[in-house]
Amino acid sequence: DQQVKQNSPSLSVQEGRISILNCDYTNSMFDYFLWYKKYPAEGPTFLISISSIKDKNEDGRFTVFLNKSAKHLSLHIVPSQPGDSAVYFCAADTGNQFYFGTGTSLTVIP
Amino acid sequence: EAQVTQNPRYLITVTGKKLTVTCSQNMNHEYMSWYRQDPGLGLRQIYYSMNVEVTDKGDVPEGYKVSRKEKRNFPLILESPSPNQTSLYFCASSLGTSGRTDTQYFGPGTRLTVL
Image (cartoon, rainbow over all chains, first blue to last red; front, side, top):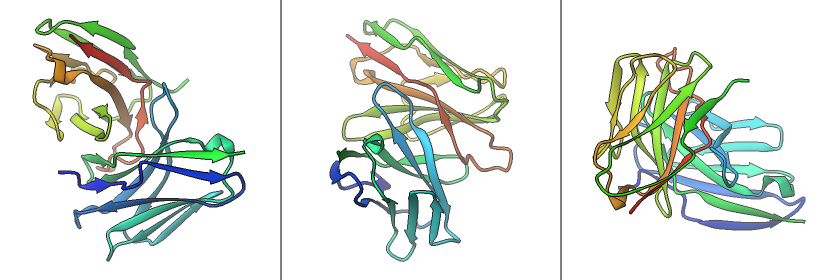
């Protein structure tokens, strides 16, 4: 059973606008979350993370929000750039195991 | 250059023929892990290793074996591959010294096809 879910397989956004990628999880024991970005023919690369003691973490154009009561996190990319076009995975880290979502393919249209 | 390497990158084999996919990291990381990526299922963890000689099952360990005899290497072994193991495989490593897996660095992937 999928413990981390990304319900939108794809998302298209105009360059310069905001991209919002969503992720839901079922296990309330998860206490650390990460977002990875993946280009074709490459391995995933780390983007940003958030601990459950926080509700927001920013790194440049990327912000991750965590709503523990809703078991929901989101990744905001502002402004979106064509180079952001990739598959984005959210993941939950239990300390020794990782659980990944199914991924959202983001296309940023120039 | 800090990296995780996997070999081979592409492999086509037949059912039942034992194979090994190698994984090596040069970052002195404690934690290493194997994943498979399948359409609609995302990345699923096969096995992980918190340190040398310590390995444990992930979400989908059936049909796979691993070993961690040295810190830098973490080979994935398929003793008797079957077509349902056709997938894209990723090896990853992270510092893991605090007891957290934290940020993982992924290899480039191995595309395995079992006929």
